[in-house]
Length: 137
Image (cartoon, rainbow, N blue to C red; front, top):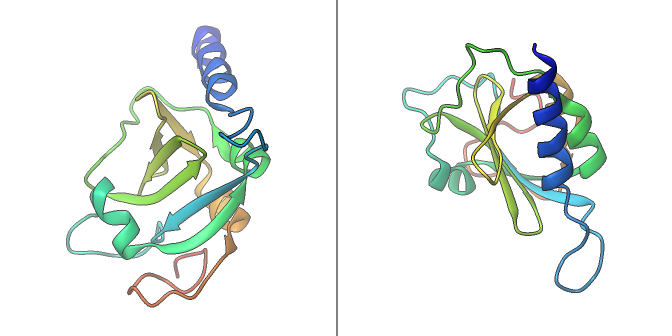
């Protein structure tokens, strides 16, 4: 990966790291709707559908940042096969089945899917037809 691409990714992470919410409190825990990377579906999930089908989880900002890996030139975000929505304050990130994400400003990034799923902490029951655990098995 080119050095400029890595610098761009680093700048994206810094720019997207919220310093706090409207109340002045730090926004360290992100709300996550997660469906599972390995779950087979006849059709994919659209960005607007992930909250309806995904299970509720949380992820810390530091854990989320650690899951980000270099994006190869051939990886493209697919908004028709979304598997996770991550919300930190006003910032919303979407991640597709292949582990490619879309940042709040529209830039693409990639996550280590195993690390991402392992970092999730359940925040409620899942009765939406999505997988019961973070692994999606």
